[in-house]
Image 1: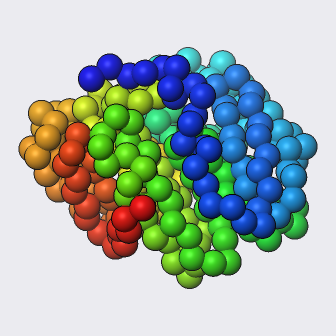
Image 2 (image 1 turned 120 degrees about the vertical axis):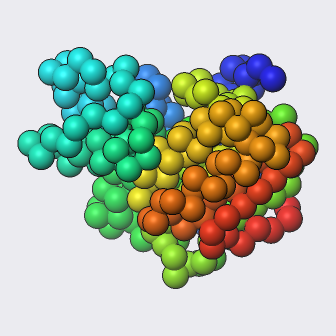
Length: 251
């Protein structure tokens, strides 16, 4: 199944959200494309944070040429900025390159910055990678491309678990590099960089397992080796598997 770049570009899944008291803000800088929900408009603070994040990443990559293209973990760098250390640590834990964690890392840094600026509740979504901090239970829908299960299954997140990362990687949707065949691999964790990197790793494992039941089984077996992961849901066509502490709901 080929990816549909146009469908991803318009991000139709953003049109599907419960109405409530939160206000939408959008920030787009090059590949970074954020949809933020908070109790007030936060474009200015979020934009400033995104620009700072991207500048740190670009400056670090200029001094370390392997940072952008590497598909394998890079050594820890105690002298790197915290954002870079987060990406390096997530890549090392998931056994992937540090850029596999870039979207989740930016989402979390923006979300935590907004909380530091006085925002009480915030949801930051960056291409399917979500930093979620609310005072009430939430349900996050899983967008799985052309799978018949897409948009019909959600994850219930207890308020006591937050802040929580909900990161989704796909081998059939989106522009991010993936060697997998899963329509979606969704990872829950306390760390958004880690959830992002592990979602990429598990998506690749679905492909190594040949997709379908075998691919889902392999990905879920490997997922159990990540102690810091709360749960994982894998969707491949009309098949779905899950492991860990996840509460699935029908939408």
